[in-house]
Length: 159
Length: 286
Image 1 (cartoon, each protein chain N blue to C red):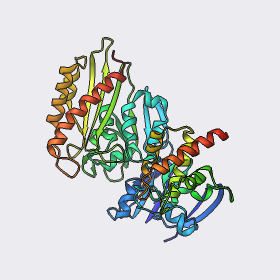
Image 2 (cartoon, one colour):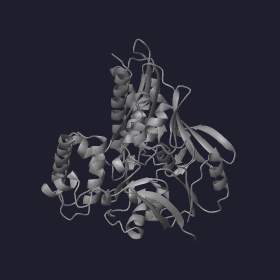
Image 3 (cartoon, helix red, strand yellow):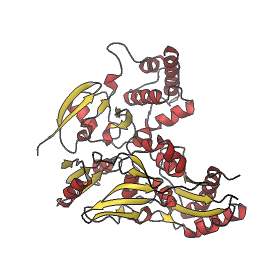
Image 4 (cartoon, rainbow over the protein chains, first blue to last red):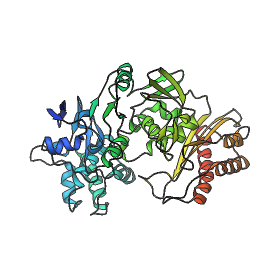
């Protein structure tokens, strides 16, 4: 069967790829485009390790077909740092030791960035609810929440 | 597998009519892709409705709202007028899954997935919502309550799909609420869900009510006896007790890992009372 030709934008770069009809966006990102920052934890939308943004909306890339990316603006963890300069959230995750094994980290960073874009001054409760779809089996979440709250504070002061 | 993404309802109907194998409708995909992943669904084709005109928009119609079949929970929550008119429907849809799921999941998909525990469905049934269905015989409107016929089963015919959900106009002093019981605070499937929609007159007397329960029967059920218990009352304590009793009496749940028959039956009454109180407050009762 012929593959589907998809034209899209990923982290601001115009991108084209060929994929099978039943291939998820996550599989396309990882296996066809070499963007392996997005992780597959569960493959069923429960863990959030594959979080990306599509048209500014946070979604699980495992629950979206690659073909659906046609004409969309996709944002992945690879677009977060600017060159060698880490995003404030990335710096705060390191500072607060908000990761251990690191599998959940890209998804959490993408989700946290999306939170702060929608709500630059979230309460801790709002932060915990927003990140409820990102599972971490190592840290117990407190350090992650502290890192996000702290990054939000710095970003507000810097703006 | 083939992937179709038509741009009009007419083309979609033609594509569906031309299918010989299993063709599934893709809106948000948050149920369909999970089923495909687990092997529960192995479609020969997928028809993505998101490029069809109107599927992604919320429009005013006859004082009410027509919500396209591919409108996500997040998009509903961002629509201030919809939230003001139908807060219960929006909060029910907003309970489905995480932020990520909310970015994609739709009311129409929640309806057509036909889970007895679907959160948005009791709220839609209480709202008197009407699904618009397109198919080989044209377009028809059907009450949302008549779409699910059992777990995972719908009344949709071959080649038919839901194109929008219509939420009717609201008079003054009318509102709704949805509550569900889950053993945690987020990210779970309803053990029981209850939607209540009411209209009050100037004196605070209930003139119209609709009550629906989820996860206590093979489909979401409307409970007319519960509505009868509210109409003509100021939603005072005796009326709320009668509402509770009617909901518990209407519940015919199963016992499973999430709850027993006894627990679900009891909680159906408790949630109905609490949801009615919220709806009453939202409707502006003193």
